[in-house]
Length: 480
Ligand SMILES: *[C@@H]1O[C@H](CO)[C@@H](O)[C@H](O)[C@H]1NC(C)=O
Ligand SMILES: *[C@@H]1O[C@H](CO)[C@@H](O)[C@H](O)[C@H]1NC(C)=O
Ligand SMILES: *[C@@H]1O[C@H](CO)[C@@H](O)[C@H](O)[C@H]1NC(C)=O
Ligand SMILES: *[C@@H]1O[C@H](CO)[C@@H](O)[C@H](O)[C@H]1NC(C)=O
Ligand SMILES: *[C@@H]1O[C@H](CO)[C@@H](O)[C@H](O)[C@H]1NC(C)=O
Ligand SMILES: *[C@@H]1O[C@H](CO)[C@@H](O)[C@H](O)[C@H]1NC(C)=O
Image 1: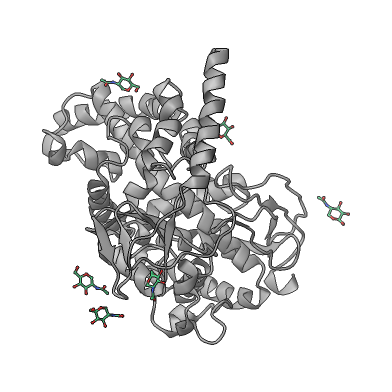
Image 2: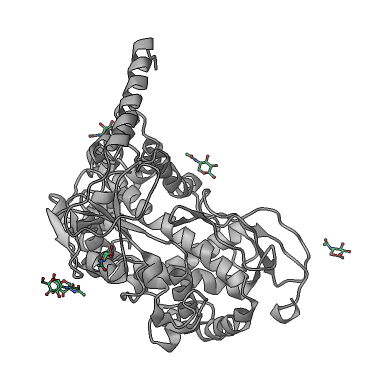
């Protein structure tokens, strides 16, 4: 691209003007707003409201007044990235699909989750005692893994222009896309390439088999039979492929990144706490015997200690504040009588809820059996456990993801001795209110006679933690 001297000059002058506005334009609060935190450096960006424990719950509950996606729009130009589905346009429909297709059929998916996880463990770590061949479509898996990383490219520009108006930031971030740059496009094209023949075959099978057609259990089949999206699909058009693939990318975006981060965090939580190993190991051995290595939903429900451990890992994940919502009504008055104006971004102050006094005198300590002793499963939301949000728009995928993580942890605990490379609990670091993934190593030591040493790391997502895998000559957990 070519910039003339005049253009550059305009930019420079523009910046000076913006800087001047910045000094002059002090944020003004209207009556009854929560107080401003004292500050010295002029505010670059916008005023945000941090909602404490009670108010957080109100924000989730008042779904007519607050919207998560409206807040995300400021930083992620989804409308331009996924044009066919208008960004995250139909979140309600996505939630409905997840409730009906995924949560509703969870027991049917369990066998497949287990199979796929074992394949992945075998490939990335090795020796998990099954011999299935690895998925043929490596580049589809790569695309799934890389999409979240690509999205993060949009987040590198902090919304520093939002103080004038959030729309200005949106204009700036979307400029490259409007000029033709779309890092997600190549992944959509990969999916399109693989999906086209699959969908076409399904249509042919349907026509030939009629009532005998056995619909495959998956999300694309759900969308293929979705009366809400026009008549039942009869031809796989480019437009339809665009639509399905964008839906899949949306699904990947809302699921994979958060799942991998929490798995990596749970592994660190386990690896750094030797006092938990025996107890969790015993439970997994018992269940493994009961199910003969083939887990069903009933067996997963019996992993009560592992479930309680997971709840605690999620509670103490460390995000200080997050899940920002935009106030979409003219103004909103909290129960404590403070008011915030339209368009204000409110962050959920997780620390206030997750380290609440209900967790006892030391709420920041890791309480592995809190959930078990208080009959609070990892999927059950309450005022002091907001990892999945709350209210009408609480994460509908939480049943699937907790199941998936429990299956994975179960298999890993059974097959490996898991410890941190440093031998202690590694400390998390932060970027603003957000917790950063740990980049310290985790050793997965195989219970085996061979002392082979493998150097490859397992990474669920290239942007996340790296694990080192070592295989050692050790007989069993008692000997470690
Ligand atoms: C009311 O709640 C808001 C949101 O949590 C908080 O910022 C504010 O400080 C509270 N006001 C009072 C007077 O407690
Ligand atoms: C949630 O919202 C409903 C209706 O909007 C209201 O009646 C209820 O009191 C709210 N609950 C909480 C805990 O704020
Ligand atoms: C995706 O990630 C894999 C593994 O990190 C890498 O080899 C591959 O080049 C990436 N693919 C794309 C399309 O970015
Ligand atoms: C599908 O998406 C591609 C890439 O955005 C676009 O070039 C193409 O025109 C779309 N197809 C239809 C039928 O809209
Ligand atoms: C909020 O205002 C109402 C009406 O003015 C009052 O009755 C109530 O006690 C106030 N609540 C709090 C928490 O200050
Ligand atoms: C295993 O370790 C022992 C002692 O460290 C060594 O002598 C032996 O060669 C190793 N075996 C293999 C297969 O690497």
